[in-house]
Image 1 (cartoon, protein in one colour):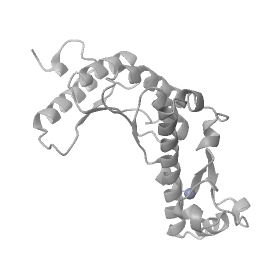
Image 2 (cartoon, helix red, strand yellow; image 1 turned 30 degrees about the vertical axis):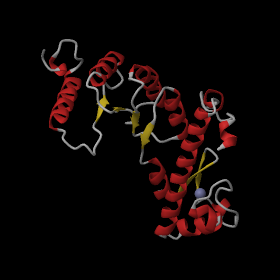
Image 3 (cartoon, protein in one colour; image 1 turned 90 degrees about the vertical axis):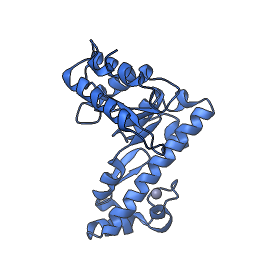
Length: 225
Ligand SMILES: [Zn+2]
């Protein structure tokens, strides 16, 4: 039987090349301390996504990633791919959605079976002086924070929120002090961790569908994490 990547119906040329790379990775993989995940590709083409999910799932890897989202396509397109591909993946191993880290998109993905995420968004926003607070994005350069001596986020226990005020963070950002960008990055990472833990708890307590999916601004989740 020929390798999966050379079988008929293997999708487009780029998909076949991706699957061939994965087979080569699998053949050379000899590190028991590393988990080799396959990556489902196929762009915005449902047939290619389905085919890629079938090929990657058949290799029996310890986890499956979905790539090629969050690369500039409209967010609705990303939601569609998540909805279509999520149910095609084997449910006995982790599903990893690559490059997604905004709250709503994470909640939508979790609702369709995804478990893992990685994203530059929290630190990229931090580097640009933006903080995630209460589901919103706050620009700490804004003059409204200049005399605001309250914590950045009352519900957050991170270093920035425990020890500094909005006014001080505003001052650091305005002065070009790298500490301000570091503190905002720490806060944004803490926010995403808290959000992820809240989703995990909601799943354990059987109220995820009610609280987080579909994500809406007035969802109870916005008040519980
Ligand atoms: Zn914080």
